[in-house]
Figure 1 (cartoon, rainbow over the protein chains, first blue to last red):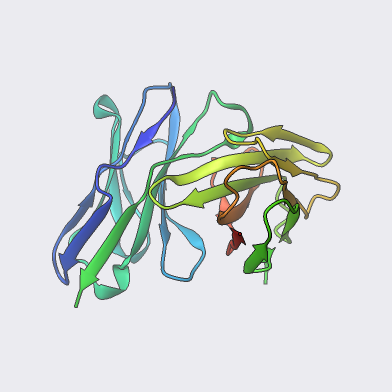
Figure 2: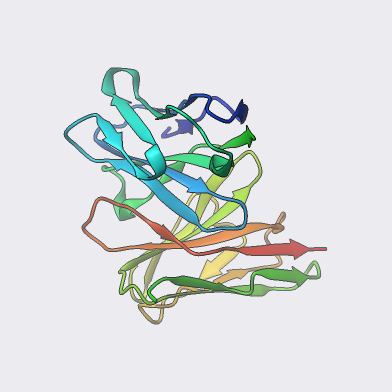
Length: 115
Length: 113
């Protein structure tokens, strides 16, 4: 079955610490990969996306992610977090074999950054 | 401003009542989606529609119904048959034939007691 797994449910960091959030997906052919962020009280918004080409993709607010096809992973990274990065982060996968452009989401990781 | 609106932001209902959640978009997107968000479970797809007058069940469609009479509107009805309706509901849309990036509305938090 198609599934997406985020390993960390809640991560607590101090400002300036480095961040890496794990995301793995089950095999299912060609995929499009996304990280979304949900800041407190705000819309779910796109951080970054991977469709093809360079497996290291850069997104907004200094975030980046690396697609490792052999590991079915798409981990999110940021070298130095800020208090304003406190939010919930979701990894999502579109399996191109699926009709309708559906996204399958991971369980989410809540990030708390201490000032 | 272009975007997706969902109303109301908070909704309270008594058990046994049907309730309809509104979703409107002025992005001229073809496809629209309804998700349910529960703590620790991420987002799960309820229904989606790729064109007007057509829609498909998602992973958790039981107890829900939708309609797509207009391109810009995709209302979701939570029926009394939904066993655990209290949740945060998110609507999304995307342009067809793109790389499947979806844009999300602000959500409606439904509480059923």
